[in-house]
Image 1 (cartoon, helix red, strand yellow):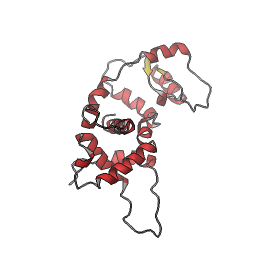
Image 2 (image 1 turned 30 degrees about the vertical axis):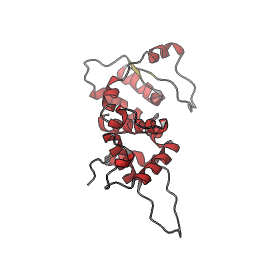
Image 3 (image 1 turned 90 degrees about the horizontal axis):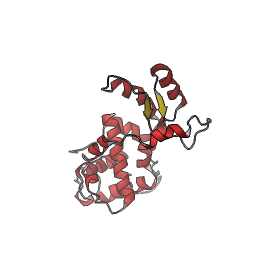
Image 4 (image 1 turned 30 degrees about the horizontal axis):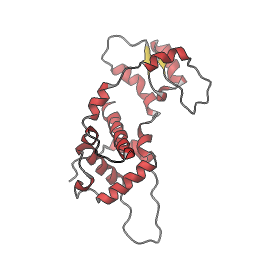
Length: 199
């Protein structure tokens, strides 16, 4: 029985970013292992901090998991999970509603994912909140931010809580991975899990 499994909600969020598996018409051999099983195994490694060779037998073979992990790293899968997700914009107002503060802030400082003119207008009109966020690289509309507002962005609050949450993933506590991209992929995967579980 699998000790750790990614949630169905996280699986549905991740599926669009997964690279397509090549079909092998007319070829013999085993069918390709499902990505869900591979990601469950990677999640187990992330949570326990164990070595690849310690992967339990209820998961796919360690060589299969490792090869598929390398493929996902090369394709940028883990970076796509957490980089400027369009879903972050939809969570802003829910987060403000659930905040444990007596008074709403005058300014909201966010990363490039918060570069949304409709969000800026909505928060300004309905709540009186100024949104400070850098523009996305692929922005088509003319810029709306000036340099003065970005001074606040540079001094934004350091997310200490995220660091505490990342300590729950033993694979990240000490960097055992020799390959930097693999360690970064585990960190991105942990952040995606945190985003689904805590936000």
